Image 1 (tube, rainbow, N blue to C red):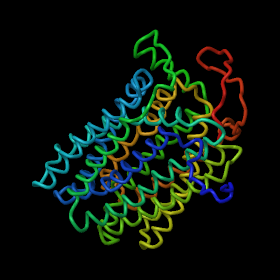
Image 2 (cartoon, one colour):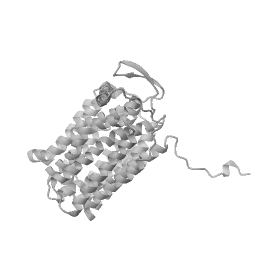
Image 3 (cartoon, rainbow, N blue to C red):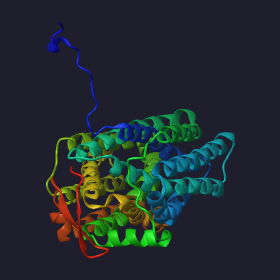
Image 4 (cartoon, rainbow, N blue to C red):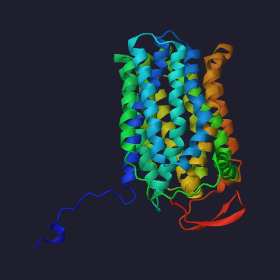
Length: 432
């Protein structure tokens, strides 16, 4: 008779890593791998076509503008229809637009308006994908290991970003941006195929008595009734605009003029990705009691890359700065996801996520479009120092909000207040 001790043990996935979670993590890994390289490729495609910093900013803004315009509709659609179908349709649009962009770059010199149009189509797909994807992930993870699950998910995604940025920068330098864009199109096709196998039968879908405007109004009431939520989103409307201007516009220009081109800039972004992986790994163990206080304090280092580019510092110091920024940003990212999972009703997750995304990226087209004119008016160094100063100021302002400082991690069922009806409702909180 075989003793139990002699029986080989099977390696089993954690209880929270079910089918949907595994598919979501694998598909996010694939898209993150392609998209991080494509960000570098798009900037250098514009520069190689004869564009300048202003043109790079316009192409970046062309992606973000439709993202802002369609996000709220995308959130309402994702809470009304099966989220996995919305995700697959959005991936199909991204595959087609990025594939066409790659073809233009590979076959000849693309015109600025063509690059802007195709990038705008990609942004439209992202507007419908992002709320559906976040709502799907938040509704998939349950139990008191939710925070760890989010950390592992983000670690996989950021690890792919690390490889994608480094590989993308190297590929741009060796084979040109067109092939990197083509690889990103293939990544969208693979990820969409994986997401087609997601199961949504067990996810409750409440009936809808009203139309799209009613859905949007309910999401808005849920969003605006929580001061910690809308103040941090408002903060990120400024922070993301400054970071986008630095990373999408000034970074490639500084790399071209002082650091040696696409390869070193890709290396710096790769170190940022490495920092996010380490930060996510840290968050699989660390569970700060005051979620948002810990997360917000970790946002001050977001000012460091802009300051480093303003000097500009040697590539080794820039890489170290990007690494530290990645670690601290990921502490916020996991804390933020855990807070949303803990506080927001499941049937409103995609709509609240849409308002979150909308506010967070609303100023990004403005920031990237004005980056070139700001450089012309004030100089690149002054513009970058301005980006760093604004990040510090708005982050300090958010810490003045009591709910941001005091929101705590919960470990048992609570009575939740519904700001839309001013009535308490009992709910079992997702636990971190």
